[in-house]
Length: 541
Ligand code: GDP
Image (cartoon, rainbow, N blue to C red):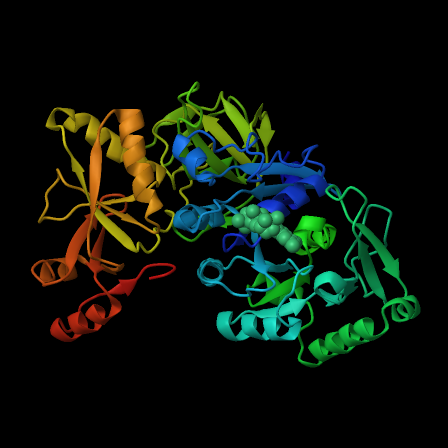
C-alpha cells in the first residue's frame, strides 16, 4: 500500500489558475479542461454566456451580478497524470477566497493579459505565492491581440515582482500576425501523445486556428529552414530575442522554479487554444507533485503516514434543494476512502465520511478514494471550519490558514433583538466558512461585531446570507479604516484609547488587530507609542 500511495501522489499535479479579472481565467480553465478531455462541451465550466454549468449558481446575488463567488476542483487525467485544477473566484473582491485556495495547491499558473501586463491583482497574487513559496508558471495570454513588447514584459515582471521569468516558449509575431512559438526547452517528441522535457527542438511550432474554432488549435512542428522560409523576419527576430534571453540567463531551471525564484513563462491565446497544450505538458513535466507537508510544529508528515487533510474551503447551502454544508478537503497524506472514520484535530471529534464528493460545474460525483493532492468535498460536514485538520491513525494538525489583510471594515447591526441567538449562530457560521472576518472591540461590545474584508462584496454576501439562511435582517455601516496591523496583548492595551484607530480581537485565531485609516497613521502611532508591535498581515497590507 505504501509504495502505492507514493506512486499515486507522484502522478498528481494540483494547481490553480490565478489572474487579475478579465485576463482570461475562465477561458483558459475551459481550454485546459477540453484539452484534458475532462468535459465534453465548451461552456460547461464557466463562461458568462452559458452559466448553467457553473457550480456557484447557488446564490441569487451571484446570478444577478453574473460573477462566480465559490470554488471547487476539476480533475482529469492527462498523459498518465491526474490533474487537479482548483477553481478560484473571478472577482477581485473575493481574493481572500483565492488566497485560501492557494494553500491547497502545489503550483500556480499566473495569467497575464498581454496588453495590460501586471495589474493590481496580479501583484498581490504574486506576493501571496512568494510568501507561501508556491512555484508559479506564467502564461501571457491574448497574444493574438495587440500586446506589449515581449522583452519589456519580461523585464517588467522581473523588476516589479522580483521573480525572474524564464520563457519556455517565445512568440513568433504578435496580434493578427501571431504565427506560433519557438520552444526554448524540449517539450519532447511530437504527435505521439507523450512529450517529455528534453533538449530543445530547433525551429518553431506553428499555430493555426482549427476549423470551427473551439476544441483545439492545430500545432505543427516546423524545422528551422521551413520556419525561416515561411516567416522570415518574424522568425528571425524571435530567434534573436530568444538568444538574448539565454545571454541574460533567462533559461528554464527546475530548482529555482521550485524555489519560487524563477517563473517559466509561456505565450499564447487561450481563446483559440494557442499554447494551452504546452501549458498542460509543462505542468505535467515540471510542476511538483504533492510532497510531505509540514504540520503546525514544522514536522513533515510523510505521504505514506495514514490519511490526513485540511479544510481550505467550507460552504453552506450550495444548492437550495440540498441545504447542506460542504467542506473541501485537500488530501495531504495517505489514502482517503469514502466511509472511513476520521478525527478532527481541533477538538478531537471523530466523524464519518460517508458522503464524499468531487465537485465541479453542476456535476457531483461520489468519490470512493482519493490520494495526496486530490480534493474531496465532504457533505454534511457541520463542525468543520476552514483550516481544520482531519486524519486517521497518527495524529497531526496542520498550521492554521493565514488570515489576509482586510481593507474594508463595517459595523454589523441587527435590528430585531429577539433574533439575537440566531444572529450569533449565523455570524459564527459565516466566520467558520471564512466568508468574512469577524472582530470585536471593547468599545462596541458583543452585540455589534465588526466585519473585516478584503473586498466589499464580502459584506453583501454576509448580510444576504444572514437574511436568507438565518432569517436575520442586518445592516452594515462602513467604518473609516483601510488597513490593519497585528499587535500583541500589550499593544492592544496601550492603543485602547488612541485616537483615530480601533483595537479589535479576532476570536478565530485570538489575534489582536489595529484598524487604521491610512498608512501615515502607522508612522504617528509608532512615534507616539515607542516600541509598539505593529506587524503587517499577508497581501495588500
Ligand atoms: P476572467 O475574468 O479572467 O475569467 O476572463 P474571461 O475568461 O472571462 O475572459 C475575458 C475576456 O477576454 C472574454 O471576452 C474572453 O473571450 C477574452 N479572452 C480570453 N482569452 C483570450 C485570448 O486569448 N484572446 C482574445 N482575443 N481574447 C481572449
